[in-house]
Length: 292
Image (cartoon, rainbow, N blue to C red; front, side, top):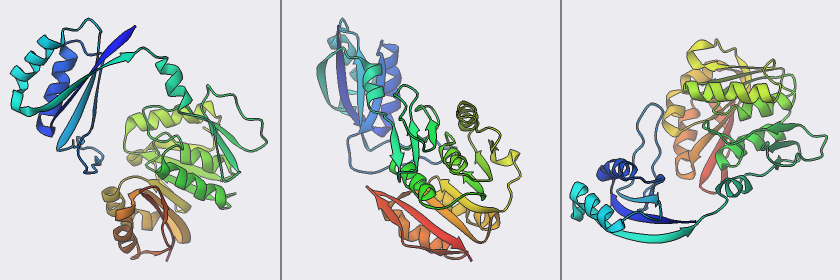
């Protein structure tokens, strides 16, 4: 079986309307992508921005009447709001198999493995975390997460108290626990992330070591290490909170930052921390420092 793929370019003000219209007219899936150069990032609790030129890609059944569909779109949106369109025939694939092939077992700093459940588990005496990609961010594949995991794997966290602030899937908390941390606290503002983290902890039998919950539900201790893989603006706002949560000479690890944001964040955190040179991976940055 083959599918029809329709791509249209429109402005950000029309992208959501176009998405709903395509779904109403039988699209199996609709994906929004950049068709212009700007980088955009949403903040917690805010609707995500779209690109000035947004590419809308719809997967359609092969018997879809594209002439009627395009007329309906132009009548609803306005022909002058559709910059161009392209139609491609897509052969059916093993979509699940393709997705799984993109997520494989990873070893970090030769100290810890992270593996999806569908992979053959590596034969190793090193700590192993089983973690499937899900709704909560964090599998180790993205540079912002892998930079934090590498830091944890390269430092001795045994018998220490660790806070994973903005825990997502709970991956950093689980890494700390597997590497011998005495107690670990994982918090997030997203209830869905907290639920996902609890399930991941249960599957890895770490629920007795890691305490997880919403930020306002858990009283956090003063920790030896705090890791936070979140965005620039929340990191800046959380500086006073982090300063209170880390003991003198305790360690701080920040990620979720673009390379271009590293210098500003370093200057902000230098009020309370002795910051070190950032580490870069692709266009992302990881900052580290000690509490003054």
